[in-house]
Image 1 (cartoon, rainbow, N blue to C red):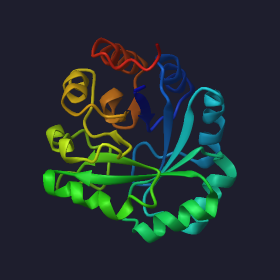
Image 2 (cartoon, one colour):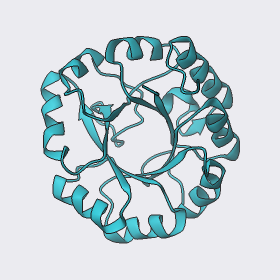
Image 3 (cartoon, rainbow, N blue to C red):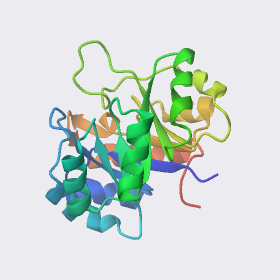
Image 4 (cartoon, rainbow, N blue to C red):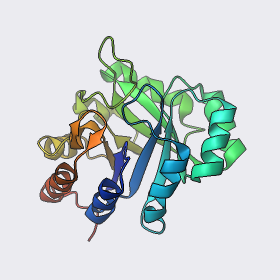
Length: 219
């Protein structure tokens, strides 16, 4: 199976280019004011043009209202909408039906009991992003640089389509791939030199580590 790779929280042309050149299947743009990776829909639209025909552009939202979704869809023209808040299955179904786009639902995982949180969304989400639960006091639902025990993913049904997220970096991606065999991976803080600042060299290091672990996307 081809490994999908999403670099999330991009804000500059050089880091978009490094992500695409490395073999990213998805590039993510975050629309959440509290995040240091927050971006305007107009800036995201300009950056996502480079991905046309090469990778899917993902709009990451957190409990967004209809007006916010509409502005993002009209301006950025994403390929995928990622819902990273407390959206109910009904809300996920509503967003998917309204915009006719692929919808990825983030689910926070800490231990094996959290795997059950996926079930109510199975019929409505196209894909899941399985992220580590944020540490106490964090204002961000993701991008916190923390991991969870990847071994708990062994309890997943084999047909669950997901991306593994949470604290991934060049140093641990080999272990993550060997323990969980995910169909996709997502990285944000692990390729940053400071919160919200993506680093081209770290992006390149990450792709080299993925390749060394046998998870290279391109043949």
